[in-house]
Image (cartoon, rainbow, N blue to C red; front, side, top):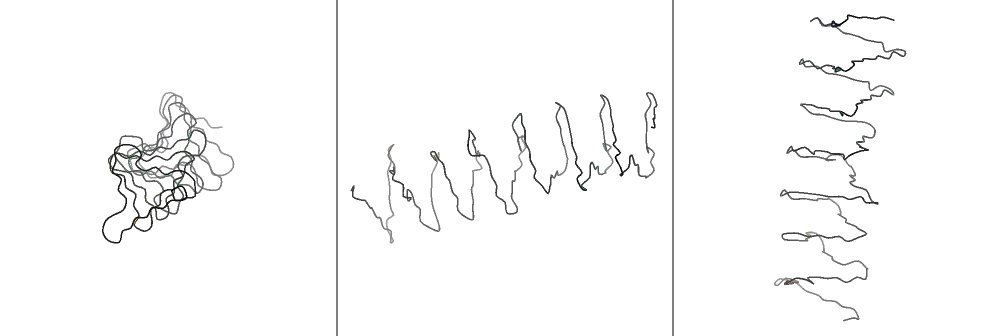
Length: 212
């Protein structure tokens, strides 16, 4: 064993201005290193000099664990921050809400904007719910393929302004599947219902079965 004590004085290792490597411990065998600070702070690489700080290793089965008590864990960067893994990345909380971009900073949030990905939001079953909110900047859903909405309950669309359903490449069908339920159009309020267009080759067809 080797013990170095200075009473209330400081202990400095390699504190002069010369360039040098400082090695503590070794890379072979089992050589644990314990640094205890009592009630003081533990600081690593906190000087104003520009430098990189590395903790842990990416070789073989190396792992890195960051722990904190009830005071929480904070990670701050004045530049970019990247989290990258070759395996699963999970962010969870077993005692509170998980927040992403919930501070009052006016910057966009991008999720899965590159690569070929399936993006899943929400869960089916139980009391799960999904809410999409937008301010005056509007909400846009765009797809190169088909957009499908399906619900075991009702689907309600309501607008405070104009509500339009259009297609520039195919027919617009309402109630076109083989389910035997009535179709209601303009059945409440004082409305003018307009079907078809005048001029050109526009046509209007009304079909009915044996119930007239």
